[in-house]
Image (cartoon, rainbow, N blue to C red):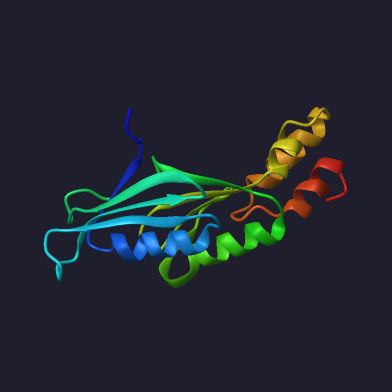
Length: 154
């Protein structure tokens, strides 16, 4: 069986988007760029993000990206969360709610610290409810604020 890829439809910025994404996510790479002619803009870019295969088609304005499909990244700590979040919302991107944001190319992302699951699914149900309520007030997830909410010290 061949490689399965998630395909993202963009107007004409697919190569710029793919380059941005592979620079952002460690262990990523552009695999191929397909053009109809040597000097033509790319029609398709194949790449991987941390080993996960994707492709972008520069297909024009027929379709647009929307939040119904997003890329979810589990981060290890607040530093990584901040780095990714800040890069994604820069230069025309925008914040969303509860770990969601949209980059300048229109692609939705979820930047989710691994600790979020520990607090939302913790054994202390009241603490988990407080952490959930705190998360619902956040754009970018703040791990220390979740910990304080879970512990009841916020």
